Each structure stands twice: as C-alpha cells, then as structure tokens.
Figure 1: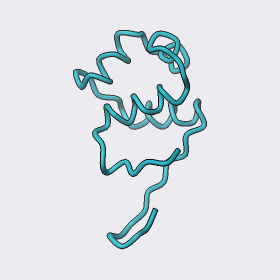
Figure 2: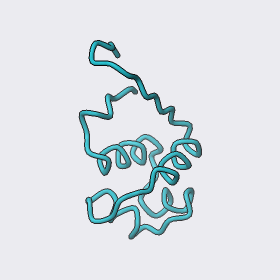
Figure 3: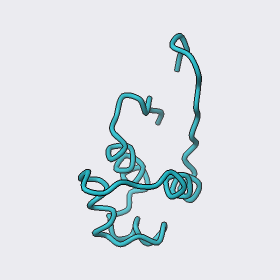
Length: 75
C-alpha cells in the first residue's frame, strides 16, 4: 500500500503503519521500545514521535520513506 503522507497528520501515519503490521498497540510498542500507552497517545495526537523514532519504526517494520521535491510529481 502507498499513501501520500502530505494528505495525513503524523498521528494517522503512525496508526496506518501499526495497522499494516496487524499488531495491537501493546505488541507494536514492544517492537520499538514504547509502551501501549505511548502508542495510544501518539495515535490520538496527545504525544508526538521524534523523527529519529519514526525512522526507526519504519526501518523495523520495512516501511519505505520517500521525500520528493516539487508540486508536479506523480505518485
């Protein structure tokens, strides 16, 4: 699955990644050394995730991150 991150809030992107792993918040948190409460707070917008932690999460769960410059880029 591919999403355009610009169309979503960061909390939603974290939730998408967790859902793709088919893990609950507790088990997903364990994979990135976070508690279930921490994941819940991130997904509900009460806490934010540092970029380094986000990159670690993506690497752990084999999610690729692309940064593309320009308005005319296509998917």
